[in-house]
Amino acid sequence: MKPVRVLIHGASGRMGRALIRLAMGDASLQVVAVSSRIVIAGLPDGLWSATSALAETPQFDVAIDFSLPAGLAEVLSLCRSRGVALVSGTTGLSAADHAALNAASDDIPLLWAANFSLGVAVLRGLVERAAAALPDWDVDLIELHHTRKVDAPSGTALVLGAAVAQGRGSEPSYHSLRAGDAVGEHSVQFSGHGERLELIHRAYDRDVFARGALFAACWLAIQPSGMYGLDDALRARLPAI
Image 1 (tube, rainbow, N blue to C red):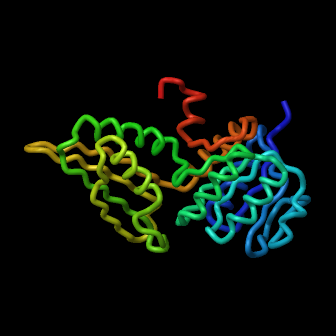
Image 2 (image 1 turned 180 degrees about the vertical axis):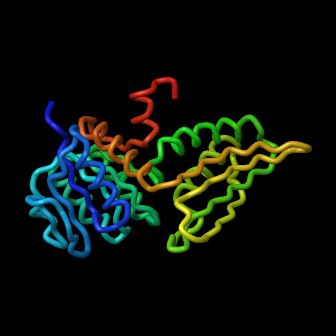
Image 3 (image 1 turned 180 degrees about the horizontal axis):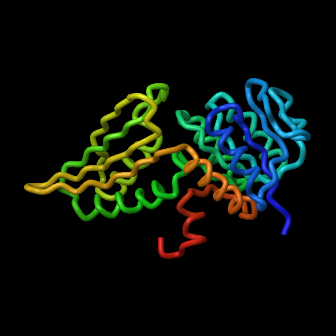
């Protein structure tokens, strides 16, 4: 079976570098190109790299985008013009950005997630079920990230908050903390009379997100056009989820 050909967009960031490192060690994947705003040192010989001229990218089966909102439009346009899949983990997107993603999903398979941890994907379902079962309890969502993270609440917190709203019709109270080099921690607390339920996910390194994105990319590359979530990829592997 031929490996899935991958373009990594936003390759100079921490996630981009993790994606390159892990994908290079995965026989089911072939990184054919990377792109970033700056020149990346130390890339393997023969790997196509660009800080511009994205349209000249070699043929690929799926793009993985961990860039900035301003950089998403270009890679989205490229994937749409070539009819290939796009996995994006870029956060801080506007309503217009999400509308553009939804429109493009008419033509290509597209998967966007605020968090590519498989554990968080499972947590989202648990949060929705708990919210539906405890509609009268107070719900607080506390998230902790490193001091360089700009958006607050985090994209993952908003996704979990949407799960609360889907389960009970109202969103939780959000509490955002920025401290040190914390990778990411999300706690959803349901408080009733005399008892409290806490659902917590902690990430200890960024490789968990990169592994999830690569897992999603392998799955998405052979799907028909449409908008997908990480839950869809998980269910294909584990139907009980």
